[in-house]
Amino acid sequence: MQNMYKAQLVSVILPTFNEKDSIKKVINDFEKLNVVDEIIVVNNNARAGTSEEVYKTTAIEIHESIQGYGSAIQCGLKAAKGDLVIICEPDDTFLNIPANFH
Image (cartoon, rainbow, N blue to C red; front, side, top):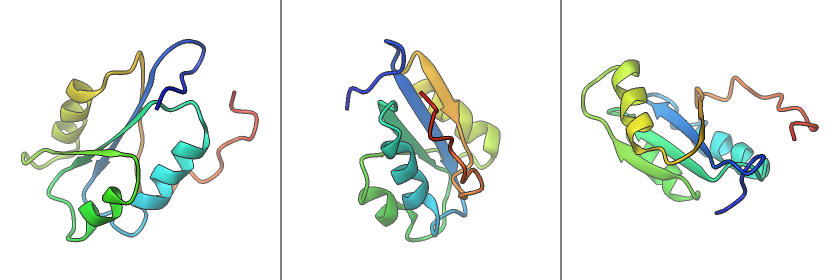
């Protein structure tokens, strides 16, 4: 995927633990923006079935076994290739993405 935002690569990091039911929708919402170049799901000992939901998308799943939000974010930051990095909760609480985001 090569979408870019203002000639910069955009990475989204989604640290996940208990978001099995929302992760796929959140990934799909970011994909629809057409500015995100990579979506990294950091599986931080996530609920069973989470990996299967991620697999249905274009996201990359990596694993961080050290439990905790900070560890998951650090793992995602190390893996991200983007010039711009977004860290977002994958629990579907950020529902209103403005249509004029660009």
